[in-house]
Image (tube, rainbow, N blue to C red; front, side):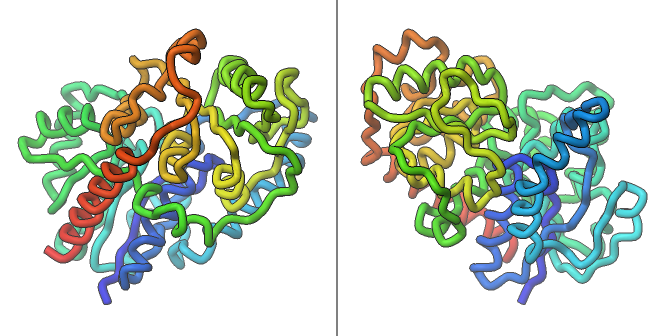
Length: 354
């Protein structure tokens, strides 16, 4: 049995980052590879900085969520924990193959160092001991400068197979390394709905609801949800880490771990999100949805929606709600998603075996 180590963003309290790490590891374990996440704890991308006593209150309030995150991922972590690049230099774990990805690990803004993080390019590992592969490693919307390109070229030349999540990222990387770069699905889409639901845990919520999952610009996303909820006679439910309820929200849902997140998506009547992973789960679970994302923002949601034929669900202006049907026809999208899923799976397994 081949042993695989994955390095990715897995320790931030972010549902999308967390679940993509879980998905890739779980998919490979399910396909008879011994797979673990290399437990490298980078500095969080956007740590919340509060002054005393608010910092203490925030930490205490979020303890239940943190505990749920840790229990969910713990069985998939490597034996050793690495808290810095320096500690990674002694890496000598018994893996045959190392995979970097997915998520924006190749975006310096997200790597925890405010510069390119060599860890996510597997620079700490000997090419003579480990085969190196990337799966869905993303640069986001970042454009490398000339010095960064030299670094990236050096590290990626040690990889046998390279893939990314967005078409724009593939174009940039191909120009740097002069090799083909495969565009693949985000790991969360390697598992279908049934594959995910075995890991879901129920939440006590009595009403049918429009689920809001946001990254930023909460007021805008909630405004979309409020209009849809009023049309359909539903409540607006918000996944939040805030105790105070938004005036347009009916139900606050705090302390959600990944298992509760999955249940809320699976049981929502409608989903409104400005998150890529929120969009991905809505598509994967065949939920009526709108994705509130500016068309000049990072390309990951646009790439997915174009590829499955649902680009009209991407809205940039609240007035556009009047121009689309509230319900989504997933018949053609499911066919296209299955083709993309099978293609991504084929790439991944072929990369490991050849």
